Image (cartoon, helix red, strand yellow):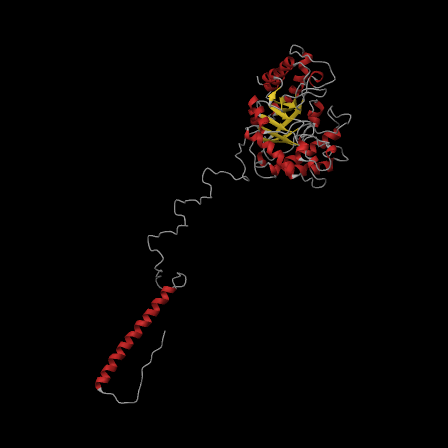
Length: 448
């Protein structure tokens, strides 16, 4: 503000001049007073912060008065969300767990009608002839099967199977100790095939299969095997943690010591004890991996998934933080000479012959009494009778086998290795080259 002072000259003045000078003085005083008031007013305008003003706040003319009109970016009540924000119902992003029905293992098994194994595919192993770094497709098709397609899985679902078991060998596509890091491209391919089944709204079993060269059960090597087992399941569990309750994890397949004297006869006490020590690792690793895995249904198997009483009775269920979420699985290709022994000429079977039926009913009754009757559900993760040019008889056998198991609340999964001819184990059911079924009468009997 400009300072002003009066001129005090030394010459004489007349009354008119004195009067004029008085008037000018009054005007000047008025102007000074007005200027001071204006300065104070301007100070208030420029200091409109409520925290620094002492008097009533005079808002900037650009600031709205009551009623307040909000800034266009400020939501009012009700809140109008940003277009990028999901509204109710929430559509999950890829990292969000799918909707999960918190049902018991028994309730889940009750919803399964019949299952099918994608055999001799992702479970192919001992592939040394492929070299040090085979492609994913080389590993998938190494045992003579075509590349898996979604159309194959759709054909299985349309035929009446509402469950699928996807056996996977992991160590062939993993680094060595101590981390056993699974190749990203292999994990992605497994996930893609799982998604084929998800898209068909199927129950899905995903396991570790044919990794017994690393997952070992003797006192001398079990510790290393369990360390590898944990590393594998840490990766598998995290990858699939957000899938819904229809995805089921099976810790092992037929856990055993290959080529040992007791391999298919229930194993030894040493092996069975070491096997039981694997399952707490499996359960705890899955439960701690987040997503839906805290309440996912899990499957455990006795030694070699054996139907033998010695293996069944030695199986110890692990402690689980989730209640009623465990299934026990065993495998049974019975009667052996009719169903599995490719060197046996036996190609007949009759439900009227107890010698033909008791190898089926005996194991089922054992597992029913030991587990199902105690509230622990059971499935037969693998069963089948190989082709001996006897489709009509196999159809009768399948209808009896599946029906008897169902009467005990046990559901069955056919082993399909894609083999229908030659001298090997011919369990093929779906012709994966054209997605047709090689034995329609057998298929129809399975769906009764």
